[in-house]
Every structure is written in structure tokens, then in C-alpha cells.
Amino acid sequence: MDGNGRWAQSKGRPRIFGHIHGSNKVRTIVKECGKAGIAYLTLFAFSSENWGRPKEEVQKLMGLLCKYLSKELNTLIKENIRFNYIGDVEKLPPSAQDILKETVKKTSANTGLCLTFALSYGSRNEILRATKLIAKDCKDGLLSIDAINEDVYKNYLYTYNLPDPDLIIRTSGESRLSNFLLWQAAYAEIYVSPKYWPEFSKADLKLALQDYSKRKRRFGLIGAQATKPNEAQL
Image (tube, rainbow, N blue to C red; front, side, top):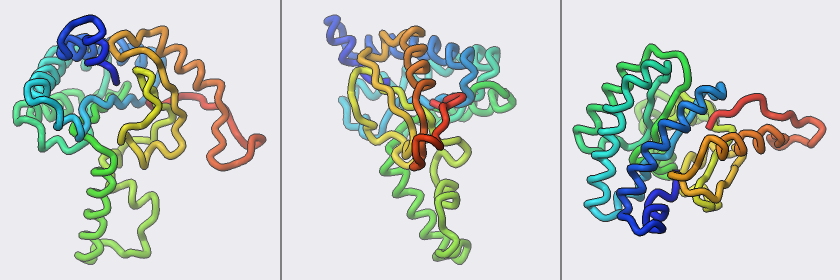
């Protein structure tokens, strides 16, 4: 969800103005994904690198996170959306950690769209963390080195209970992953929208899904073996 601050600055407004409008856009896109039958949606809400931003902006972002979850809890329950989060959330303020856990608990019985927020998340850190956990289990005799394969490794990632993404949508015209789901995105299709996140609309989402539906996913095979995707995990 890139471009909140730049969108605000382009309008002569403070960066937090863009973050507020960006959080409002989340509701629109989440509901639209649910209507489209998408089973999993992961939103990159706050990266591990974002801690390096000005202290005041970070504090306001944490406050905005808490406000959003408090405000949207009833909507999540009503829309049958299950909430989830990934990342080094222990770095978040206690108030944010508490509301994250509460939202997970109160939506755990929902069976519709699984909405995941990536918070204090960085894929390189995730991979390093997984490697250290595997090394510890090997050292403690809980895991054999010979038993380590991709499936085992995946179980040590934050996303152990999530499927790999089929489609990654990057807003603001930037053509990079920015340390997002590097392991999981090995075969993800990538769609870049020139729109800043606050101006990303239902129509833009539809364009992204239409583009994705036309692609052939080969996974290392030849064209004749490829199939078109049926549904996407974002």
C-alpha cells in the first residue's frame, strides 16, 4: 500500500493526511476482495524499515493502526473476515499488540476472507529468524539436518499458516518488492499500478485481477503445460 505520504505531499498536505486516507481505502479494497471471492489478502502496513521514519510519524501510524482496528472490528465480524498479522510485532507499542491479539481472537471463528496485516515486517529478517529457529531445533535434537526441505522451512516462517501469494499488487508505480514476502513470492505474479494507494480504486483492483486472469503460470514448465489462474491470493 505504497504512496500515502507522497500523495498527501502532492496536495500540499502533511504525510499523516495521506496515511489517514490510506487507512480509509483499506476498508474499500478489503470488502471488494471479499466480494471477488479472494480467500487471502495480505496488506503490507508497516515495514521493519519504517521504524527509521521520523518519530512523530511512527507514533501517529501506531495510533492510526489502533484506531482502525477498533473502528473496523464490528465490520470484520459482520463481513465474516478473519484477521491475522505477521511480523516482529513485539516491537509495536503494548496498546497496538493488545488490540491486534483482541482482533485475532474475536474474528477467529470467521470463515471468509483471511485478512493479514504485515506489521514491523521485513522478509530478510523473517528468513534470518526462521534460519535461527531451525538451527536451534537442530542443536536441541528436535530436527535433523537431513529432514530440512522447503516444506519444513516454510513452517518456521511467519506465514506458516498461509498459502504463497499468487498476485502481488504494488501501488505508486514502484517496480520492486521492497523486502516483502521474498521467499513466498518466488512464483507470484506482479502487477504495478501507477496510482498512489489513497487513490487506488475498485476499478483499479478489477484491472489488476483482469490482468492476472490472462497470465499463464508456468512454474518452470513449458508453455503447453501452463494453466491460467482460477483465483488469487493477494
